[in-house]
Image 1 (cartoon, rainbow, N blue to C red):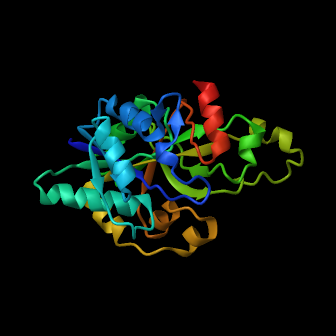
Image 2 (cartoon, rainbow, N blue to C red):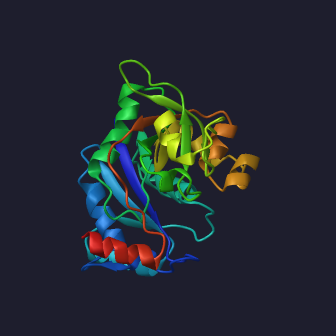
Length: 256
């Protein structure tokens, strides 16, 4: 199985312009993401996909692989598609593509290997992702933390199918008035925003139009579910550290 890791990175951001180039104790965010991804045993190649020459030149400066893409893309998924098609035109074919967030400088390579293992456990898998058990009430009721509702784990593989993703706290626990008790009464999962795609299926994903559920929740993965794609998940115990704002950047520096 030949696997490609792509890190979409754009310079413009309403909350944090220039985020990929932000310095975190001597290294840029995008360099830290790239170096962590390069440690994953499952990836045959890692490429940064950007629409900005500053990011392109910076990745080149630290020896990373990078490709310029259109500035018209609406999502990181579309940006990944352009890179995948360009590489195939050059004779580089891949079986699996992993879309890795460019704002998680401390992503653990084991998480990337875990998501790639879905396609080994189930060769027919279409889309793969990760989830983590929610342990804190603040996460459970935070609309910025995306929740996942899943099927029971399959025997032997521990794979689960995603039934739905939401910013809302789901499922609702009827009859449990005190929110402090929710985590004791049910197992809740949060979604870890990394995706693996069977490349053959991915081309169909690229053709999909924005769906009504996606518009309602502002969650791209709902487009896939609404169009009958199966998203399979594995549970991770490893935490992620996404950086969405300058305040998060200060937390990252303190973390280091």
